[in-house]
Image 1 (tube, helix red, strand yellow):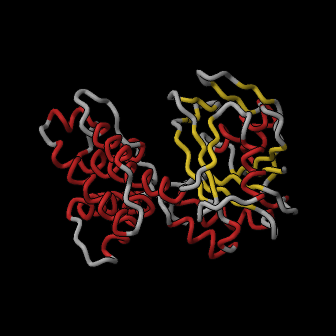
Image 2: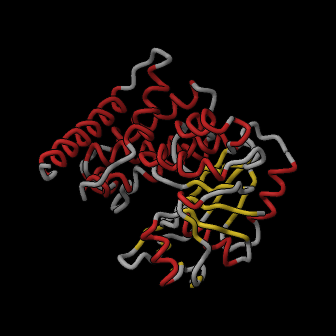
Length: 315
């Protein structure tokens, strides 16, 4: 099976690298500077599950992409999705399966509109990774799950072939019969975490210390209600997980979106918070905390856009 991994960053580089390490036929779709870096230093992974040093992995730029692949692993940021769709288009043939690992749901509609619903699998990953200054992938936690499946949960020859290709690498690959529910559950969790830690500009422990856990649990309730109203009520274990996560005294945990805000970076506000709110408002319901959190993030984006426009050199 020929696998194209879109990007060789923290997520795509980790899972693609592990597949390459396991002997799979993996090619990375990257921009020119990253291709040069990979050719020079290779793909490097540092993890408690074992390091990997993969010299000169196969890489291709969008301009040189000419033929279809069997499986495309897509793990870009939501704000880069439109560009990624155009870049990857030459690699999508009539039998290509696209496995997206983005958060939320809006990307599913965008991919289906461009390539057809049948081409798009459900998928989600659970891992914390980052790139260091040298482009090395650092695995920061003790889990590395990639779950995938047909969107309707049905068995199929292609999903079994994909499961076979993804198994045996140094990460947990799980074929799911309820992948859309899992994606909604993850959406509820990350929207709750991002919503409250960004709104409060604080870690979970600081929010608890401020006696504000009721805000956290109320936001969880709003996100859970939206998922349920759309036919994907989170299972009790998912709700317990996020409640435990957001009420832990002394916890230093905060959403990666908060870290992005603190360094003035772009954020996935529309994809994670805004789209979830829109799914709720479409059913004529009010979600006051999620509405405030969304407004807070949109205000940040407006300020960032203004500052970047002011800082841009005149032509």
